[in-house]
Image (cartoon, rainbow, N blue to C red):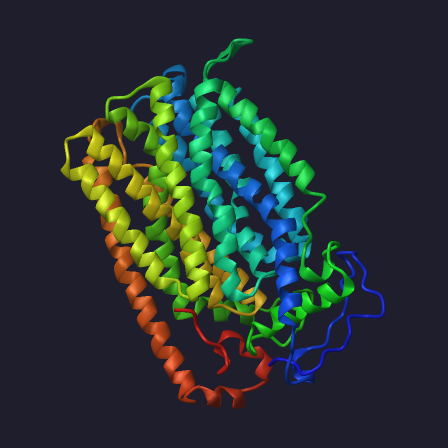
Length: 496
C-alpha cells in the first residue's frame, strides 16, 4: 500500500552502499505525494548519470559476442580449420553457461551491489575477449566462448533489473531502448572497426585476431572506469540531493500500487515465496516463451548478417561495410518504439508491429532473387526484430512486483529466452548458401508465433485488469498480510 506522509530518511543520509538510509514501510501510511517537477528533475539526473554508462555496457557486450561474425569473413574459419559445423558449435557454446547464470546473477545482484556487479563482469568478459584473439585452435575458441558466456550471462537481465530499481514502470522501456539500441549500433560500428582492424598484420597475428584483441582491451578499460560511477540503488546515489534521494525512493514505492510494503528496495529481503510467485505468474510463462521466439531472429541476424551479405555477392571490406546501414536503421527503430511505447503505456501492440515488419523483410529475402530487394529486406528485418527484445523484457518487468519477484521472473525470462541461441546459431549453415532459405523460413516462423503469443498475453492482461476493476480480486486482501500480495494486489494493474 502507498503512504500519506513519509518519515524522512534518517537525519543524515549517507552514500555508503552497506548502510543505506532507512525509510518507512507502506503499512505505516496511506498516500505518497511526489512533486511532478521534482520527479522530472530526478529522471533527468538519472538519465544523465546512468544511461551513458549502461549504453556502453550493452554496446561492448553485443560487440564482443557478435564480432565473431566479422572475424569469420576475415579469415577465422580458414586459420582455425573450422570446417563443417564447427563455427556454429563455437557460436552455440557461448550460450551454455550464459543461460545457467541468469537467475542466480539476478538474485545476488542487489547483495553484491548492482553498480559494482555489472561493471566487474564487464571487466571479466573484456579480458576473455582479448585472449580470444590469441587462440590458435578450435578448442581454444570454444573455451573462450564458454568463459565469455559466464561473464556476460548476468548482464542483460541484470541491466533490466537495475533500470527497474530507479525508474517507474512506464518510464522503463524508453530507458531500455536508449541503451539497447547499442546492440544494432554495435553491429554498424563493429563492421567499420572490423574493416580496419582486419587489415592489421603484426607479431604473427594477421587480420581477424586484432578484431578481438583491440575491442577486448577497450571493453576492459571501460568496465574498470564505470565501476566507480554507477550507484547501486536510488537511496545510495551520490548525485542526488537529500530531497531528491528521498523523493526518488518515494516515487518508486508509489509506482508499485500496493505491490510492496517496503519503501526502499534496499529494505526488501529475499524469500522463496517471491520465487514461487514469479514462477506461477501467467505473464512469466507467456513472456518467457515470447522472448525465446524474439531471440531466434535477433541472434541469427546479428551473428549471420555478414554471411547473408556475402551470399548476396559481396565480399571482404565491402561486405563488412554493407552491414552498417541496416544496423543503423535497427538502432533508430529501437528508440522510436521505446519512446512511443512509454508514451502510450502499452507493450503488446509494438511487439506485434515490429514482428509484422520483420515478417515482410524475411518474405523479401525468401521470395526475391534480386540482390537489391534482398538487401532491402535486411533493413526491414533489423527495424522489426531489434525493437522486440527490450519491449518484451520491459513488458514482464512492468507486470512483476516486488523486487525479488521481478528479479526471479526477469532472470528466468533471460535464461529461457537465450535457449533460442542453440536454434539461432544453426539456422544459417554453409551448406544452405547462398540463399539460406531454410534460415530465413525459421525466423519467419518464429515471428508469426510472436504475433500469436503477444496477442494471447494482451487478452489475458486485459481480462485480469477488468476482474480487478470489478472488485473480483478484493478478497485477496483477507488472505493475509497485504504487503505480501505483490503483483496480486487488487490495486496493481497489468501493462497491456
